[in-house]
Amino acid sequence: MAASAGIRVGRTASRRAAARLSSPWLLRGASILFVLGLWEWAGRIPVNVAFPSCTETLAALGEMLVDGTLAEAYAETAGPLIVGVLLTAVGGVFAGVVMGLSPRAEWLGLPVFIVLQASPSAAIIPLITFVYGIGFTAKVFAVVLLSAPVIVLNSYRGIANTPRSLVEMSNAFLASRWQRIWKVVIPAGSGLIFAGLRLGLAQGFTGAVLAELIITPTGVGDLITFYRSSAEYAQMFAVILSIILVASISVTLLQNLERRLFRPELRAL
Amino acid sequence: MTGRASITSDPGVGAPSGDGREPAVRIVELTKEFSGGVRALGGLTFDVPRGELTSIIGPSGCGKTTTLKIVGGLIDATSGSVEVDGVPVTGPGPDRAFVFQDFALMPWATVLRNVAFGLELRGVDRKEREETARAYVDKVGLAGFEDSYPHQLSGGMRQRVGLARALAVDADILLMDEPFASVDEQIRRQFQEDLLRLLSEESKTVIFVTHSIEEAVYVSDQVVILTRGPSSVSKVVRPGIDRGAGSDDIRRDPAYLDWVEQIWHELRDYLER
Image (cartoon, rainbow over all chains, first blue to last red; front, top):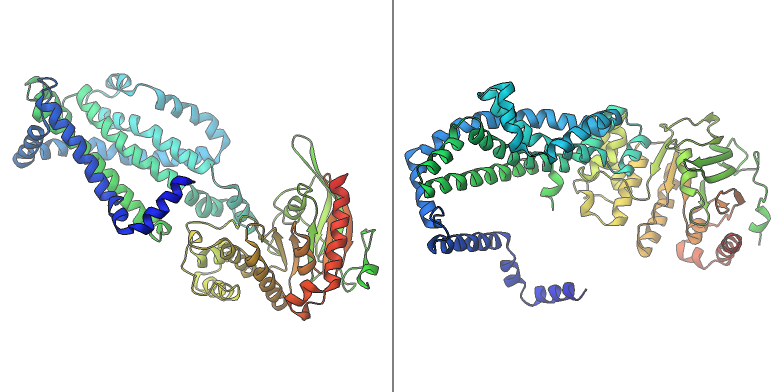
């Protein structure tokens, strides 16, 4: 109570300053600078010979961006990643929705995905090569393996937890089974479904890179392996940093797309 | 008191209703047992006269909402029957529209789409249903909010959307489940008056669940008082308050106050038992 009163007083006293301080961009920028500062400091001590400073890494990143090394690597990694994530997005949402609607499908499917989510995927990925070899298919499978559980389980939860009162309302106003599913159940679950897709995309990046590290060195995974073996640690960290950047940017883009296309009520906030 | 003479302590089938016509809804020996053996209704019998507002009132947990949902066809009765226009109820139907206590609005849809939703489900084309919806949004006093989303509205406004949605499908019978329970007192009074005004224009039969005695006496032609669960009908009374007098006068009218007092005594017996 006291805290909220304090906030209210603060707001009236210096609303503008408070607004500026709590601006999400400023806070985000400050926290990023803080982490980069720590990194720079740790790299200069140095903590380890294999740990480059922030500036060295950024310089290497710039260099690889300019000479096209990164672009080439990403072009190769993007294939299995995009195919895998698209497959899982369509199949996973479908599976999750069916499990949420049908108790039999829930009984059959839910344990599989809970076990998959809890299993050590990095240990399973090498097994994929026995079945699918070392090519494109194996890498797509690795992406699917990592992104499917979170997409399926989130979609399932979104559907299974449809507010009872909305289901009752649709019944009272004579919705058919399909109308109820299309017009009430799926829109009501779409928030969780999209959250699952965002997490699934992030997991898909992990799957794609893991596959390239574990199965066959190509693309981004190959760059990491190569720079590690030649002890060019600044370059190696630059590649890792680029993965983090690309993954977060894609997840943010997906979130914006969701808002723009499917959530008019959030825009009106 | 002239009103007191019209108390029917035996609300059996065939009890005289408003004007002697066939009742809109006839409820006979209705029982409901939930899984786990909880017996909510222990044999309810009462008639709902056509074109009137009937309130169901009783101690909390006495099965008021359960009764209403059985009439709406949203849940099944264990035994007994509900007839609407002489036809037994087996599920929801176009002759009944529901107003929910928690509004049950779709947060992702605008006011206009929420109001038009019943028509949308019936396959009415977009232009026509939005035209109808606009008219009802206007009638419930929300003109200008057609493109707002539920989270931008106050509780009272949200329930107006719920009411407009129920009116838009043009059902003969309106089932209202504590529609004003989540609305604060000042808005509640305004809302009650608006409801009465709307109903006088629409000639609907209304079943209205409430836990407020004042509200029941103020809005109802007939009040069904339930005992504590497993509930049965304790009494059916017809306050017959003259609403021409204006709301402030009605609330000071001795007849009104007397009815409130009587129903309170009736209910208090069950609370103390």
